Image (tube, rainbow, N blue to C red; front, side):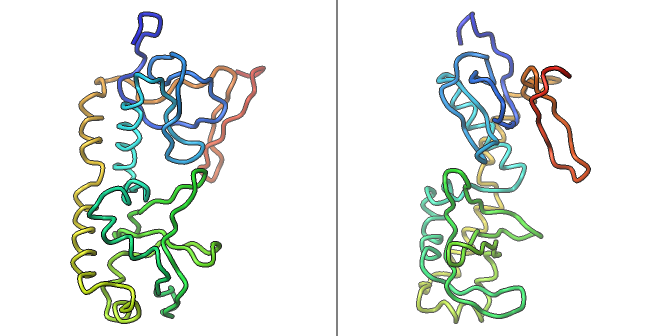
Length: 218
């Protein structure tokens, strides 16, 4: 960090990347890249603060109880389970009907996929015919019905693989980054990125956040 770019924040929350200058959110220096959670949400950073951006975005995901599928596939223990869902699998629809043709939805750069915690269950993203998407509780695949339906795909160790993966997720996939983020956050300082000059931020009645370029009113 140079004297020309004094530190603004030592820990941040991800912010909208839309209508932002190409400067580091931490120090205001020239940005190198964005660490993204979604295509428009993340932290813009310089070369010096790339590790901070990764830490803070992962801390945010820890709090939101989501895990990037790309990160999960790089973790050997989770990969040992998730690789079986890359094939055509059978899931149980809400109606109770068992349906084939589903597979792990690995997303895209613009639309990444996440393992999410929904209704007290860790759920994996699945897709049918590159069109219909659904988050399916991992523990649903422990049911005798789905174990039998997927017997040709799943190994004999599938139960242990699912249970050990659930333990990893329950313990906090990003807990180290979250703890580091909390240690680095300055007491009383804002974790919010300063708003871009000329941009007006507000919420709609449905809670959706909107940012508009309105320099005459700001």
